[in-house]
Image 1 (cartoon, protein in one colour):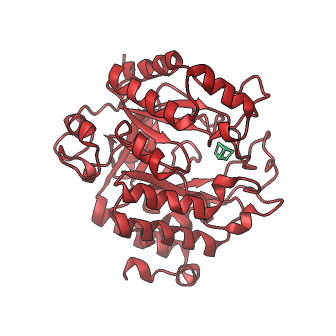
Image 2 (tube, protein in one colour):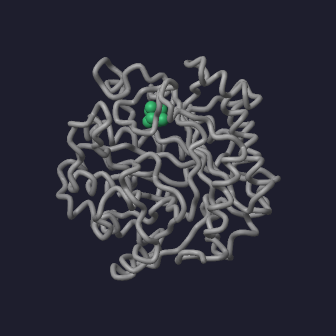
Image 3 (spheres, protein in one colour):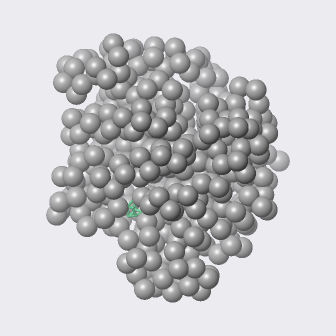
Length: 377
Ligand code: SF4
């Protein structure tokens, strides 16, 4: 069955075990019995944001003493910790354009010598490239064409969760109300804009924030359509909503395991097989079931920093994760932030200034040259 023949209705009628078996076979055919991860250090460049998603625990209002923009020295200090632990990726994660909403954010940026957060981000990526061996990956949310062009020469890859395609969730009382960057059209535009500039791109869905099954399938189809236009989607993350005491959705139910497995398996069937399918390993304890549902990647795992987006959920120890994968018949391998099929010294998906450097970090099959499954000394 071709991937565009999978509709919400067809999938809805199938038992979970049947969808999982088909998804698992599709994963095996394209990715084999190898599951990957990226050894990364996480740098939350700013925790201020002009949006106010009801499930977010990362964001801090500028009046909160914990609100901040990291200085270049702080960025470098985190980068060096990551380098010492064998990381190869530096993930810049940040709130969306806080300077457009808050005077405090504008003043803090001005103090650093900038008017726009994306300009500061680009210079911090350049600093990391200059001073360390790490490859920056940026999660900067929605981006305009000129912002993508500014970041592309200094970021090996970029990402932005589509999260959902539901406009319903932007209405009053819903999780994305009054969040200009969570209007689905804006996020779909970023998917296409990064595709038009050939940026290896990560996106994904957030499951359990009030979207329907049909809306999930529609979101997966929209991601796949963007990939068919540009070929740039390197991975799709299926992430489960996590209830936390300090969020507006503190009483909202988390998605059930069966719901997650059905969605992961549906994603594997709908998405082009060359798109990697990822689920974070720290947001659930069902690693074997997730592998059986068709994933082939665990995403970034940090031996240095916590998961700032889900601070109560520790990363698994990489050696333990490797053991668990082996018991299910999978080899855990380290990859770079850029997936193998985009890597070559003349890749159209890599800036000429970065391509040779990235290619030199990859072994023949495109995965990380120095595989590091254990803690560095
Ligand atoms: S856009 Fe991201 S950082 Fe901003 S409030 Fe929403 S989830 Fe949090």
